[in-house]
Amino acid sequence: MALIDTINPLLTTGWAKGDAGWSLKDYEARGGYKQLRRVLESRMSQDDLIAEVKKSVLRGRGGAGFPTGLKWSFMPKAAPVKYVVCNTDEGEPGTFKDRDLMRFDPHSVIEGMIIAGYAVGAKAGYNYIHGEIFEAYQRFEEALDQARAAGYLGDNILGSGFSFDLFAHHGWGAYICGEETGLLESIEGKKGQPRYKPPFPANFGLYGKPTTINNTETFAAIPFILGMGGEAYLNLGKPNNGGTKLFSVSGHVNRPGNFEVPMGTPFAKLLEMAGGMRGGRKLKAVIPGGSSAPVLPANVIMDCTMDYDSIAKAGSMLGSGAVIVMDETVCMVKALERLSYFYYEESCGQCTPCREGSGWLYRVVHRIEHGEGRPEDLDLLNRVTDNMMGKTICALADAAAFPVRSFIKHFQSEFEYHIENKKCLVDPEVQRMGSGFFKAGNV
Amino acid sequence: MNNDYEKLSPEALRRIDREVAKYPADQTQSAVMAALVIAQDEKGWLPKETIAAVANYLGMAPMAAYEVASFYNMYDLHPVGKYKITVCTNLPCALSGGVHAADYVKTKLGIDFNETTADGKFTLKEGECMGACGDAPVMLVNNKRMCSFMLPDEIDKLLAECK
Ligand SMILES: Cc1cc2nc3c(=O)[nH]c(=O)nc-3n(C[C@H](O)[C@H](O)[C@H](O)COP(=O)(O)O)c2cc1C
Ligand code: SF4
Ligand code: FES
Image 1 (cartoon, rainbow over the protein chains, first blue to last red):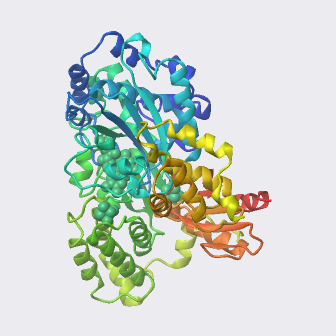
Image 2: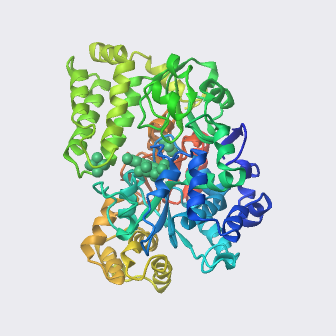
Image 3: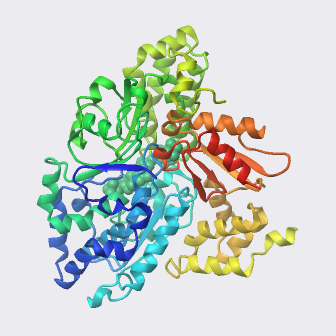
């Protein structure tokens, strides 16, 4: 189980008992479904509900940080059939918070989705769950059964006249289905290839109907926002960066895991909560928002606070809140090679700049790593990324380009050393021991 | 044998029906991903005949079902060993030994990625981020069982457990 630690726990209040606290009665005991009940019993207007979410300045937790209330307000009022879709396809390398939400507090996501359904006038919803986390999918199915049996899902919920049902759709291994329109294609039983936009899902979504799609953590925050009020939620964080956020901290720390902290918490504090650097080694670099976000060198990230604006100002993205920590045992060329391979593998192939470009990036980084780099390769890599960014159907091409550009920008001398000397700057034995896989006397 | 592959058991069909019920009545194709998983669980992998049987049952073109089966990584379009072990080697895992864990399994089993041991027991695959990077190194056994913190002792234990 991932270790957790919090300041001002909200989303993680239910996690304290780990696998033993997820069920309906536990959730109700900690105030669960109270907000749904209040919304339905007071017949809150859809506009008031959306206004409250806007006040919280909750920004989408799936990566793009789009204001949630605003997104909900785009849904056409008159359409007879609409959908709410939850994105639990968590495949962005470094991100593992939505899996824990599914395991430890699935009902908060269900309650958030029902309330969203009420707000946008949808009668059905789907939660798309990452293929590799079968146990979490099973848990969510169980939670749905509980909610249905208790009358929170189905026809005429709590006698209010409002009906909403919710189903789980299990993915089966395709990163691109995390992109919202690829995800919709996938629910429709097709290859998960992203659609041209516009039209956006709010107008043309699942089965061509207006659809609101949000990340798991975004929905989970909704009951808490209604519980404390939008303004109080906003004030937990900092202006324009409302509330708390889950950060998945991985890599070279003593206690990898999920941590919930208020937006605006210093990075240094988060690092301390994660137990500090493994073996007391020196911090080299951090990818602050999932593998698609530009890497930041140690001195830059140490001055950042963890919120959208601070990380953007430093030249990266808060993204999904996946904080990948690298110490001095890392060869940056090898690290980039792993990421470039991933994007090359996961490009869905529809757009030539992405399909061909991601292959070029991987092959050139691979040859540098393997001592076959050429002096002109760094320019070549930058040129290839120029031809990818902003020129494709979805943002995967940009996601493949950002790591390459930022690794070269901040660690150029390490790449140059590699090309010139045909080997890593960091001693291979030091790299080998850095992972912690080999203990003294082992293997 | 071939005949076997063309038919799904009544139990499998019942499970597929439950998936179909999740979607609007005119959208049975939405259940194809789940139906292919159910079929793969039953046959061990997905021969063309089985994919066609799934397509026929859902009233969709076999080619459309085949497209889905070939797009998503966890469908096995070729026979695999009794235990398919997928190791995550993406960067967050690699920082905590993901690649080393894969190398360790390769040495122990004497096979490379995408190979099966001669006794047909193990197949090794390289996986991408499984959304569990805090538990690195992580491995998936037969698509559904996630194994966390797979250091040498744990890997030995897992392999010994697979009978
Ligand atoms: C290649 C790619 C992968 C993505 N993967 C995810 C993902 O795993 N989970 C997620 O919530 N959003 C992911 N997104 C973002 C979604 O497209 C979408 O913006 C998000 O689900 C909207 O929800 P939010 O506003 O609550 O963040 C991805 C986007 C791209 C381009
Ligand atoms: S940018 Fe890449 S992943 Fe996105 S639609 Fe185009 S080819 Fe597919
Ligand atoms: S990188 Fe291995 S599970 Fe995420």
